[in-house]
Length: 140
Image (cartoon, helix red, strand yellow):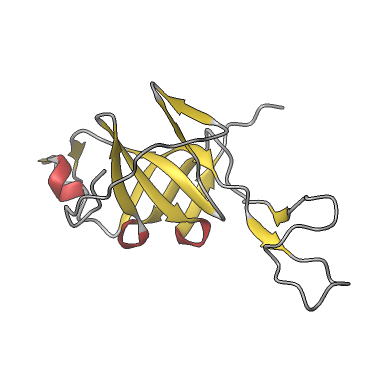
């Protein structure tokens, strides 16, 4: 994997619960989301087509959410001495879920995103707090 600055990130194996990408699973942790960014050329208001490298430098970008983390871990208020990420007696961790859902279109602050590539597919990872707007299909 490579991050936005081009540094290699060595990940030996993903053991994951949700998104399966060929031979690997991708697990998103905490309140982060995995986004497949918009690609291709965009037309400016003056009618000029902008290449992808110009679009990547914009302050706000968009893309489809392909995976979400479980949310923010919440501790049991009765057990003040315990850390919130520790499990309770039955081994269950409780979370405040993310507002974003798989399939939503998100507009987000591009500087808050980290670019990764998994098996030749580009993705962005960012905290839910970097999302400005979610656009969701109305299924009702």
